[in-house]
Image (cartoon, rainbow, N blue to C red; front, top):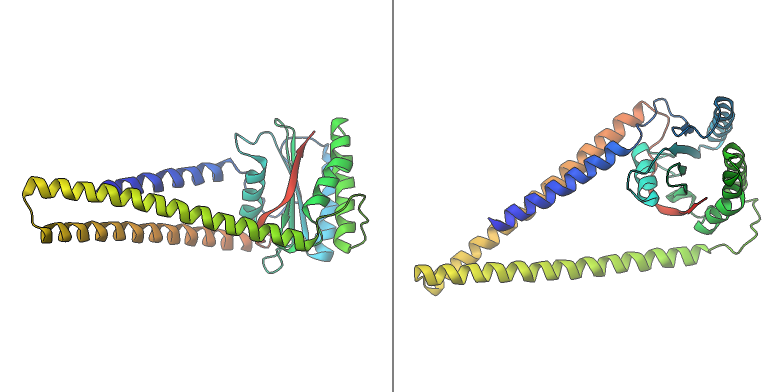
Length: 280
């Protein structure tokens, strides 16, 4: 019973956290807009000009570059906020993952360029950092937000055509892949350690409870074995419930993405955390 209660509490916290994060994200524009200046950094004419520029680029290349400005991150990190937003909106084509998000947070004065899986080869992390350092931050410090975004998107266009000549050494694709493999292996090792520790802790609790019940009831060894097996069945049921919860959550998210895609020109692209962040 204690195990089931603990699982229910964990599921409740995770579910509420995901719900609150989704509520903090700006609603997905329908139809799609490539410049979403929620924080009011630019004039209406500047927004229109940049929108036309990015729309034309998406129309001719299928690569979707989206600009979003927000008033506040509301306590989230800009890395997580940008990744959640890019995936929630489905920027880029689903079969190419060729989306890119430029996120600007007004209150925190932070910038994030989030790169879709399919663009990471041509737009590595170092290039996004260079763009922020050379094109965005200097202009933003002078309140020239449109100019900074206009110049940044020009560099991105050149990079995606393979014509950009960087001024600093870029991270090679091999180095990027090695880092991804290292992070994946480290994550698996940490997860295994956590599972082992939690398993030992739960096993000790179960064993102590069974021994206490055995002493109180004067049960035999066979009684203890039956009780232990019963506890294992309960834990197995809890695991099944977790799987059902995960599948249901994933199914609901997929349905939402598909229905949203039918109403918008964003194609359902995916993001894995590529890109970089800075402030001004």
